[in-house]
Image (cartoon, rainbow, N blue to C red; front, side, top):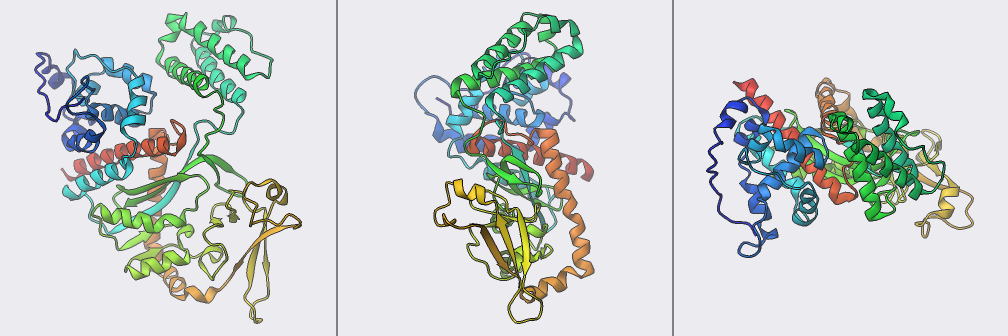
Length: 486
């Protein structure tokens, strides 16, 4: 049960915060910048208002998740730090003497209270609203790109994954006490996952029996990750792959297993829209939705900057119809002419190849036809026939007796004369220089807020992670810009 009324904290110790949490503290600044009651309004339908035990205030639970996104630590560690960090308790609207939650409550909050809530759009919309009110966003430009996030449980076998996590723990322990090598159990030589699991549990037990080692923060963080993995394994039994994650390609020779976040950002580096998808999805297919979502936040959009992935014919037509300048270089493989099954086969601009509906990358391409001799030239992309024969999506795509599987794209350079002319102008080249800003933002999300790897499994978990991480980076950017205005 939650109350519609805000309670007044009457603790005699509240004045401590005026001493230990200075005005320039980031968490104090966020509290002053954002009225978090919008969280209560959004989530109150998930609670009973007049029956049952009093629930932990949903605003406080959300703030715990926000702290986790800002400082990139586990549930256990964020709760532990909130016991003694006064800036955390101040941010959480707690009295200094108040007890903290159990870390397991955060998992329940994510699963039960945030389900069916458009958290990503809501949080981005709130930050853009604040930025517009503070007159921080003045440009009419958005920059678009996609960043990838590896699945928490990747394509390694369960045994390999457990080995990797226990190795990180041992390596960190040895940095502080090499004599611990003698206390750890011998590594298992079995190929059985249950034996590797038992070994990890023994490693955990050995460390926890050494208080001087176990309480070192660097070791505690790695140990908590190992414990979470072991616990997840007991619950799910087979966790080596994330059922909803997919293989995506960064180049022709490299791939990742996980998710993509398609991002739009203002020229002031405030993220204005985001869409989380599985890893195999094409960047260019989400341009129109990113523009529409950015406009819904109150942004006025006159220019869109992106790489070649966004120069698809549909995007050129959409931006022209909406009087938007699209600063995206043409790529003849994706922007010219008609092609069959356009909604099924996507072009991967990093690898320079097409990807089939099953997520398999073409292995080679060939250019066919001669210039200026009647018929149009085309590119033909060839796929690995061995994969096609065992593919679960082969029906209607691959003929059982076929000796090859290919996909052709007609090249019609005359289709996009206007864009060709525009991309050769000095104006285009000057505007395009701003694209680096979104690459820096992607780096900030990954390196500063743990967005390199998913913190949980599934698309829903990835959306929650994306929502809190983007909310955090937007608030930090707004605070920075406000200081520059002073």
